[in-house]
Length: 377
Ligand SMILES: Cc1ncc(COP(=O)(O)O)c(C=O)c1O
Image 1 (spheres, rainbow, N blue to C red):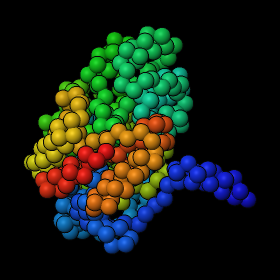
Image 2: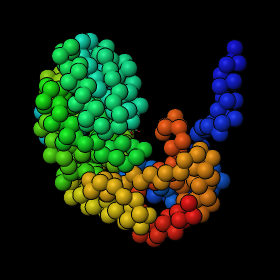
Image 3: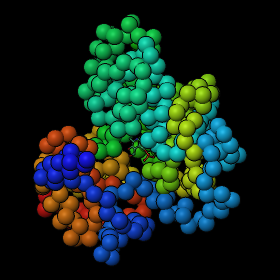
Image 4: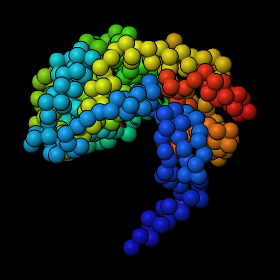
């Protein structure tokens, strides 16, 4: 019965692409592997080091689970407070929280982009946006990565045949550290009555004076009415959100399947996000620290990038072949550092890489060690 599964797995093994889950223990900016080896973790998305900071705050909850979907009785006063806190942070009329960022992205895009609409989607968008596009009843066209001219051409050719056109993009691309050209995209969108939907998963907490993300950094928050984010990366917890006009929130409550048919965000996750968002000074201090580390690593490794990208804590080290990326990652492992090798299908064929991610919790000495370990590539 499982022959074809076996065969698919054998093919993956043969190509060195078999992926597995490895049990590890998380310990601040370290992880401890199954053999008890303690490594500096350069693979997590806990950019601000808030995961352990929030854990140290001894959060108390009366129930672990939210016990039901939001519409039944799972949306508590604490969910409402978190949604209002996020709406203030994002400067939108309303916000909703989801069990994961993936659910926020796929659920929002699939519900908002309707039959008769067109979606223009960046080719390197995250899987959650891609799945949202696939599940939606809108037509979709994938455009070359960050190519504003291509978007303009597609709008000129297709705008009139559709009721609405949505430009869907990550704000910070998780495998490249690229920032989407949101200012230019907004300008092109305005010329064709199109609307952007942006996933700020890796921008939240990092970009913009107040840390609300790339839309803030580009000064286009007011032009991008629907912004999706996650509580699971820089905010150190778990869950997702969408910040949007009230009418969109009301529409999602009635049409977004992951909101309607999934248990609401768990109570510890709600309380953790409230703690993470409680102190803007703490976010800013940690943001300044991690961005400084990212600038230092890029400068010392001679990695050029646009000014807006220099402080992004995702630093990809291009390698090429899968095998070379895996052996580079293993060499760093042997030196006591965890830096994941990222291979297709997560990145395009022939573009395997190391994906370094930095955290405000990394010390200067840890980063010294990383830089010393890297030149051998
Ligand atoms: C760009 C992007 N969007 C959405 C998500 C999903 O967020 P979450 O991990 O909270 O489900 C991720 C997670 O990897 C991501 O990188």
